[in-house]
Image (cartoon, rainbow, N blue to C red; front, side, top):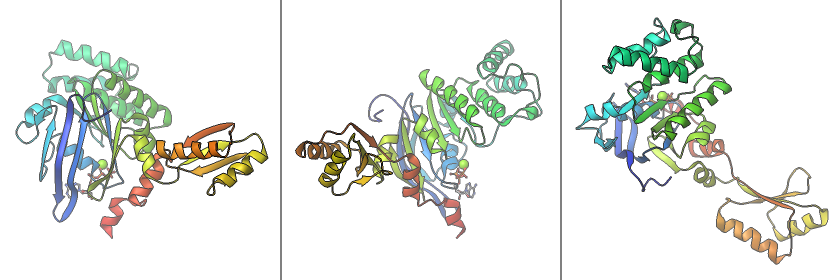
Length: 319
Ligand SMILES: Nc1ncnc2c1ncn2[C@@H]1O[C@H](COP(=O)(O)OP(=O)(O)OP(=O)(O)O)[C@@H](O)[C@H]1O
Ligand SMILES: [Mg+2]
């Protein structure tokens, strides 16, 4: 999705934040279009939670122009609060209450009439697969159930913009997928999601756009595919039926590598149109027609490690 088209849910220009001497956010810019999923990636201590806390009015920035839901964060924090929901990195579930009571409490906080709170709680318990556990205390819930309840509680105020700070940490693969489905459903209903995660596959699966936060700056921003094209390691794979054809192709491409002794060649490429055209032109010129051709871009793990050197910001601060 192009951030320059359609209405904007979140606009951030020159966001700065320091804790004492420690600069956490150093002039950050990004735009999140309405109804899209934006994912902020970064190692431990990069400033993801700090960003969520600033955008959701929980703490103040040191500078920058920020609008959320069309409202100015500095001068209209009340309006911002009324259009957002936040599911924090640490659960807001009260463990001494039941799931239903937690949801009813959120209804009270939003000043909904009791009857409406009760109906909404029942709906959400159903939607989040918590009906059986509805009247058990939350301390008896599994991690996945607690996470689902936490997100359900966020939905009580029907927010149009939702901040999810590492929503699937500690969940098993099935619970993560259930959470992803819920997030996709929200977006299909027009909700905007601002998601932080350390799981690259999660950003890859969900996000329309991804930004990588490292040492106070956004070191990369784009779609998952754009980010994957930023790091070397991609290649075009050519499959052949016969050894003689493969040898011919290997001669035509000086830099080709044979994969695992198969009838397959890998030609280094960024996967972009220009380099694909070069490969095709060279095949044509040598009158070689491979049996198969596919493009392999590096995955987001490669991108993340290349951009951050595999370090967590925490470790660097401690040095
Ligand atoms: N209230 C605070 N006072 C001082 N330093 C803080 C405060 N809050 C955060 N920090 C520091 O700011 C940096 C960014 O923290 P933040 O929690 O935003 O990182 P994060 O990207 O969410 O990390 P994680 O992946 O571990 O959740 C860290 O070095 C942290 O120690
Ligand atoms: Mg955090």
